Every structure is written in structure tokens, then in C-alpha cells.
Image (tube, rainbow, N blue to C red; front, side, top):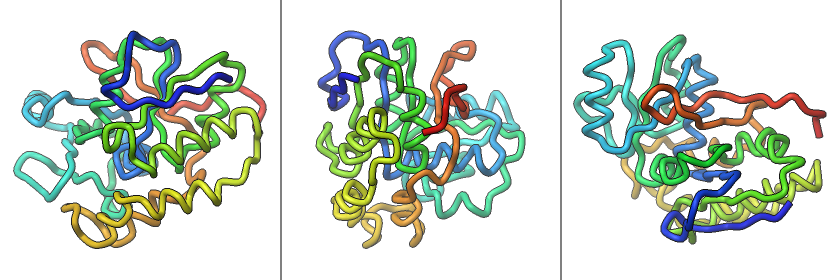
Length: 227
């Protein structure tokens, strides 16, 4: 598979397959939402849109980066989500990088939203594809944790069972990991870094597709041989 790694601003045209990577923390959080029972995740383009959607749908819950804020029931932290019951709920997610990256490739025929926790499942979806564009969302395409995860997934497509340890070490030494560990990023839990570095915590991939007028995430388990 021909793998291309680009930042959000470097996107040109519409790729046939897009893998949007945000390890710390949007697309680690999204699989956690599904694990806690969420039915779907709607991606919002702005904080105001997220609040508008939850005002229109009072049973939905909004999630954002940073500390708790009025109108937002959740923060972008896997550590905090572990104790939240989201059974049957719709989550509206707006983050600084991950949701922006997904919306930037919203017209691609296949959009996957990925992190280490769904790495192997994502690689399974990509097997048999001729090419994929990996959108490295953090730090204008230079975020080491996102690039490392993207490169690991690309390798796992052609090398099932590839060793993730070196890629995880790169992510653990990233600036984002340091900021989370030292409390620079608001709304973080002490376990967030460790949870973001768990490989294959979940057996499903996360696919983005249009649901009415919104780009929506769902868990996706491809029908293909496990590898």
C-alpha cells in the first residue's frame, strides 16, 4: 500500500482513503466513548455548533478540549471517560485538531479516525487498498505521537503482527505526552498518557461517514481475516 503522511494544511484534493490520526486525544477518546456505550459521535465544526446541536437534542452530550465548561458534559480525556455511562447516547465532539482533520477530508469515500487503541483494526480495514493518506493532525503535521501511530498502522497493513514498541516510545517522548503528563493541557487525567499509548485496546476501527447533515463516527469492524 502506498502511504502518504500529511498535515491538515497540506491536503490537496480529496483522497480516496483518509486515515485521520489524533492520539492525544480526540481519536483515543472516540473509541472510549463507544466502549462506554455511546451510539454515535457527531463531529462539530465549532463550539457554538456543538452547543446548538445539544440544545436541539437535549439527550445528546457535548465534548470538548480543555476544562469543563457550561453546556459541555464531557471533556476530551480518556481517563475521565472510564467512569462515564454513555449507554445509548449521542456524543457531539469538537476538538482542536482531530475533528478538524476529519472534517477536512469529509468528502473522501473512506475516512477512518485512528489512534494506537484501534491500530490493528484500522490496519485490517486498509488491507487490499492501493493507497491511503494519513492525516497527521497535531502540530501542523509534525506531532510525533500522531506520525508514529500513522507509520505504525501503515506498516501493520503489510506486516500483520508488526512490533509497536518503537512507535509507542516515540509517542511517549512527544511534546503532547509531556504537556499532558505535566498538566500543561487543561482537562487532563493523570492516566491519559498511558491510556493513549495502549495498543489495540479495542477490536474495532472508527469510521466517519455522513449521517444526514453531519459527519458521524461509528465503530466499524471489517469482515476480513484477522491478522
